[in-house]
Length: 129
Image (tube, rainbow, N blue to C red):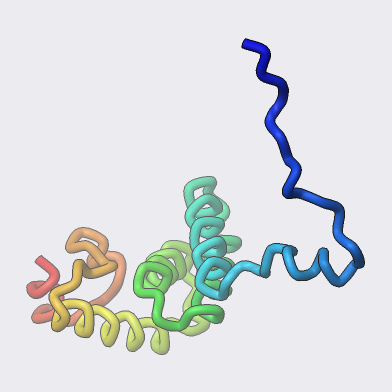
């Protein structure tokens, strides 16, 4: 075939710098930023850098307060390094989040065996099981 390269006839250089901003990608959403911090935290945690993981879990929650997986992961990470700085507030939030998830029929962010790392009342642990 005598076909040449594809035609880009409809593309043209912008007429002014203003045209560039119209097509510039937007900043990541707050949810995407929170998710990025959450995944960074998981990577740090898996590499044994739990202090860094705690900072990223907190950053994720600062961006998206309703993030049960980050909240439960923060509680477990804090317990593993004996970080008691905000333990009670974190546990209150974990309990409330778990009850809400269970009441809504959602899969809880804290699995039954992970509940051993977070002090929970027996009725809540039984609901998780």
